[in-house]
Image (cartoon, rainbow, N blue to C red):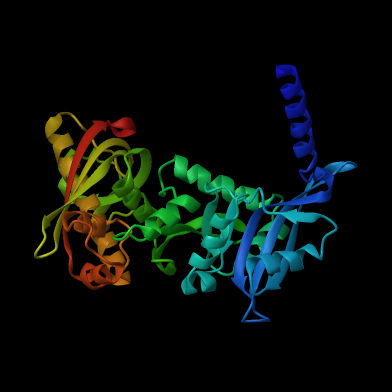
Length: 379
């Protein structure tokens, strides 16, 4: 009896397996990068720019760029498919780039299209082009000897790992968007004199791109989201504060009142709501610092000198946090997430609209504690 059941089960499994559609790899065009824009020729339609892998038994794997237009992403892909003898499949999209204009109008609808597609990984990376996605990808693909889509994917991943920008994939963006009290952010990509690079971090109000912050400010923002293991930054501090500890080397600019230091930092920022009525917050920044280089030689003989350096670095970092906060407050976008702290204190009774009204009025006291760990080349 058991043998008979096993035999029947084997037949059923074989029949089910034979029902699955199969595709030969050589007949597929695998989309790994997609750009999304508003069509210039048809303003009521979308334009997608696709960078695909094509596999051919006679040649090595090659990369190709296609484009198509349509009222939906899928229709635009089908239009692009008509320009290729390969069946385009989105199963390996690793990077989606939104043109600046479409990002300003809002990208939520396109994110929903991605999340509804079971073939799309929720770890797919997202980015914004400083122009149009098509211009970014077309120019990059034609003017460089590289697969521009893979290059940008590797570049963003590298910066995430270096802690210089916050990590945000598809699932991160959607999670932040639906979490009342915080706004998302994405890297901004550009081609600067044919050199592909990340130029800034784009700040979103909900799903709409409203402005950007510098990469230096992106590092500070990252410290509010996680513990940064190590990241480099250059700071400007008053020369007078360290003048009696300088070795007497000639500065590059003798008339400058400031000097520059290159440091490596690791640490995090802890924020809390301190005054619910007056909307007061405190953000405590705890940082360990490796001092690598300075524009002038500093002689560090004792803890007193180290203490002066710690104080000046703390003041410089505090000032940068205040500038960052003022910038996002003017955009009325809260990438740091003070609204989440306020919402939690109020038993989750907060709407996005309410926080939009409150956020421009909040105050934040930044307290920076710097611990000088290594003196590096200027010891």
